[in-house]
Length: 397
Image (cartoon, rainbow, N blue to C red):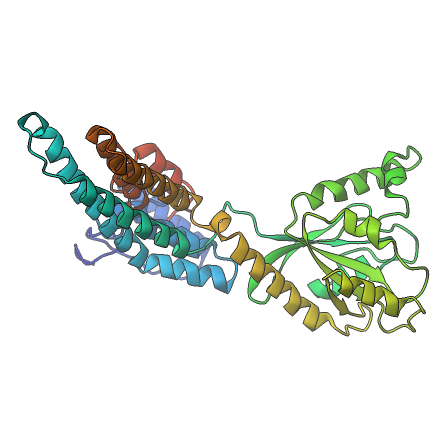
């Protein structure tokens, strides 16, 4: 492929081989013997960026597509790769530089009593740029990269509620140990599943005894105490919890104690063992849960009844979480942080102009805004930042 019509805008030769690892190894060894070298991580995409084929946000979109673990992330990666976001950022930066040029011209001629930039026009221009930056923050493609954690859902509830059986039903494999004895689960299992097109980490946890505080401090069963402490720590890292309750018999759970431990996390209540004859308290329990504003589903981990609707509800719940916390999932965080810095700098420039503060302060804020916007597309990005970005790529990309 002759330059400049290749990915890197360089002359490129591609060798297509059978998928035998031995043949690939022999060929690479021979090529290196003749003076070639193995590519660095992300080297081809970095060359494409340095040649101007793509901007830095598009280069990161390549990594996002490689790392996408569900359809929503892949779509967001493709949106970023299209270049629309980068072009909007470039136009915004160009307009910020135009306004900065006018302000700096006023500084250059300040000793000649010539006002090139009227304060009202500068304030208006900074306000417009600030609003456009806000718009970019709102619509920046929400994607995760390889180093970002998937949202986690915990199975949580009293002992013998059937959490491990439900875990196996959701995963579709017999991974968790299931038994008739109390407290079978000591160390939880965590796997990746998909719910509603969203990749999530699903984790089984140890069942809670009636007196949680006493069980955590008990010296008689160190393994159980350790597993319950782990459950408490995991609650601090989870985006959502499936509160699994046994409505197949026994006594009603202590809702106040259970929900008190879940005050900081999304909760989806699962009434398990729906294939059994419900006790008298099951109906009032459901009404109590609904009255507390909780979503309640009935399932049978044993028969599989209700598992499909539960998986769908999990996807819906995590979809809502993505909408609430989309800033934490953006490619990043780097783009979002740069946009915030630019927005704040433009706000300061607007306010300084409105208060008739020294024009040099306005220029400094406009300069910071333009540099922050340039960091997104790579126009002003330092080499050490580029090194960190491309080091996350796999070799050959």
